Image (cartoon, rainbow, N blue to C red; front, side):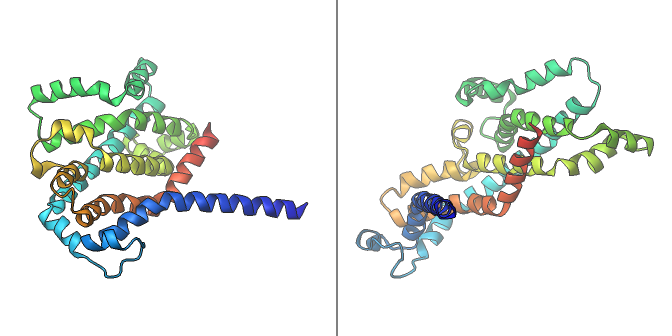
Length: 276
């Protein structure tokens, strides 16, 4: 019996290993090609370059203006995620713990965007930004990113706030704590897994976002890295080493963040499953 169990485990591990190799191969090929010269890409099919060629990265960073695109993406991602966490947690806390008239109706209105496809919002967003004078501006794009992530953020955080025992809040009120002190010192620390999960998901989403940036921005100096990557690709479509270097620059930051923060994603998803 034990031998059959071991064989089943071994088979599972082999299948998972094969899937992992299939998923990782395109990434490894991209990194390998980014470190090869143009000639070696066509002559050396191995994933290990014969000679490390860092010029692709320097050309992409300086000549391809990836330094500007990278900085823009950092600004958009940081401001967007901060806005989603701040506004989303405040809304979710108010709807979950405060006595607000018609809060169930307000909650339903706030999460309606979850059922609306993203392309369906492009026309109203474009018209609104144009009337407000926010087209081709950084603040306009950041506001769109915050708007896009709020519905899920409120939905997720509200369920976590509702599961916190009311006795903690009542004890804090007896000790003289205000609503703001309860929110900052008690509630937020208790929903850290949800906040971390929400931050990671929105970081990946905003960093990889392309369509909104394509519609809203025209100035190359304001473009995020995914929008700039399209411009770079059109200019260097036959220079595969530089193109792979640009793709690596766009991919590696999110990959590193995800690997470092994956334990928080697991905690958040597990906590949500247990609460359900």
